[in-house]
Image 1: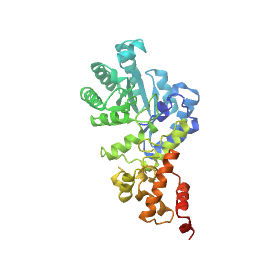
Image 2: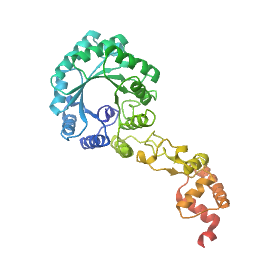
Image 3: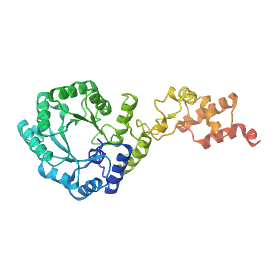
Image 4: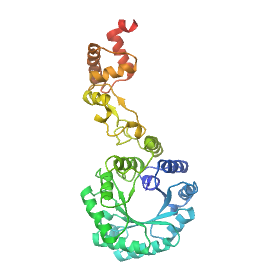
Length: 371
């Protein structure tokens, strides 16, 4: 369940144009996302127009609108043509007392009334337990049980402020599923860098749905990243969802530009450094057999392998790089070039460009090069 267009856009300072939201929805649908949380229709204006436009695209994915447990919110989602609604309300005492200024009982009443209203009018309902990770377990189980009775198809377990670890996640999600008998969606935040790990722990505990965003975009430190979750499920969990993963870099780069948020070179799965090798030992191993230092093929996510020449390079990398230029170096030549490369790399405080390597070669072997 991708929420780039809702929770992702709630990142401080991020606004998608309607054209961008439509393009992102098409991309998500094309790569294989099952459900798209398109926005918050009750906001009206451009937001409502965007959600309505996405609903009219005829995508394979289910289109979900986000709502408070308020009838007019749900009516706005229905008016846009959403086939699914998320009904969200806080379940922790911290939120109930300080944000909602109400009681546990009142929260249950609001949720049940909204869910029953939606049940008669829409195909699919997710009831979201905001701040579930700080909620009293007995109350959370009661909340989930009542939601299911009212017609909810699943409960969204929200680690709203990202305080869980995978071990705690597993225990709590397993408890909710066993005691309430409900389907669970994981919605994890990355405040401690564990959003993807916690999402996968929830799956191991029995959750069958995961909320994600492209690049992990989202409030504060973001959400579980779509590309990380899909590839981790495939290569670590042996669960292949059939996504067009070869388009991940394309989608990530588009969302990066649309959101104005840089895609770091070191970003897991889609960062440009994922298959860049500079260290002599690593590069030599990757050249001999990529599986020595690569867990999957770069083409699988739309990247290319790079042998970077710099301070930490070895002669195998030098010889391989010059083969790209049509030059077969001797061991002695590779050693001589490597010494110059390391010295220049330290002076420049970076790896070297191809032209700089050619200049080093010409300075060392100018006459031979001419011949």
